[in-house]
Image (tube, rainbow over all chains, first blue to last red):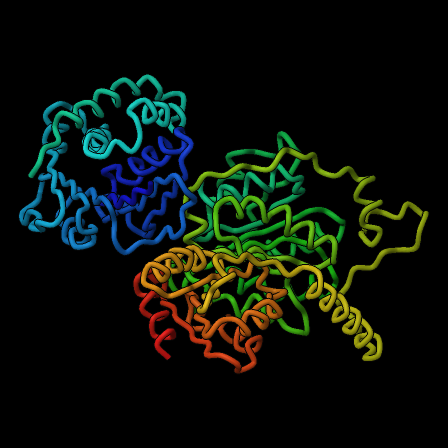
Length: 180
Length: 353
């Protein structure tokens, strides 16, 4: 079983960290993982995307042209990656700032209003975990417990008191995500 | 962890004595990781940010002359600056590790991944008749594993060795098992293991002279012949490669590093499309697996060289194939990485010949 994700949004939204935590969670479950960022001169406000592959077998190419699941957090990312979801695959998008919603009918489309909810609830710092919660609700490739373990592994000790808040965000995302 | 971080951790764990480097994307995490790990407080390894790449490589020359396990790392433009020092080290027969996490050129180019430094690495780069032992990792695990391997080969043959990687492998995160901790060699171990090194003669032996200078032509020819004999021995003994699905292959992809990862996927896609494809991945770019490619030419009907450059390794494949079967190149330039599907289309064209 192999699941190929593309996660994409603005720099500063936590796209790369979300990918890293997803990959680490896979690692915690003994899976093969690859995290391949589109690194560049981009900083906050620019575009950022990362390919995450979680597999039971060794991963071949870290560079892909199509994906099982695209998680897109802004219009440029949606424009770029909607066409790159494999037929029968999944597109999950945050509706904030989306003027032209996805149109494909041969894939499953889900919407998560994570940015709106994060802004309301003073949860902007864990926005990416709300999104990840939604992703894992649709495709439980790793367990919530593994994600929390990954957070313990990747966050510096001084931030460990924030892990419960991340857990809340993950659960909120699971409730928020819906078809559409 | 990232490929770059794996290099740094592996160096600390396998008894590296010193790192001298200057930051450049996409490999700065090597120096950053070393600075964060502070090995000078634990193993005693020296980590120094030099004032330039030229200074770095000459610090490596100095450390290597005293028998130490020393290294540097950079990316393409920085490696160009080091070429004089690399040629001097090859001439003076000094073991050292140089890591190139390459990016797109020519010139300042781009910070995105590229394999366009193949020629520079295996065909000279610096001046004179010399060779650089070249290892091409295709995973984060190999980034970690090849540090010790490169040092081992460098010391076995008293020759500089290079890890030729690229921005994709350097920036990618994967699972990695780091090597076991091993202490740095003691001064006594260095003196015993490297009798040529300038470790201090203490009045007990004649001086060891490390130089690449030989002003008398006869003397310089003799040095060159000795170097060439050493290079032939390395070509006989140290060729490394990996094969994937070659036993029944009718078409062969040859690719190294990140291009080999893409090719593995292409091989599977090709087999689904009814083309019996296999992959040969050179692990050593020099010495090159010419003999194995030559023998596979008796089995396969065509070869595709996938490179993230304008076609460099394809020349060595053609030399090995000797015109017996078609050998074609495919690649992308300027920091763009080819996608598996476009490579499959190229393979289909060869299969249709």
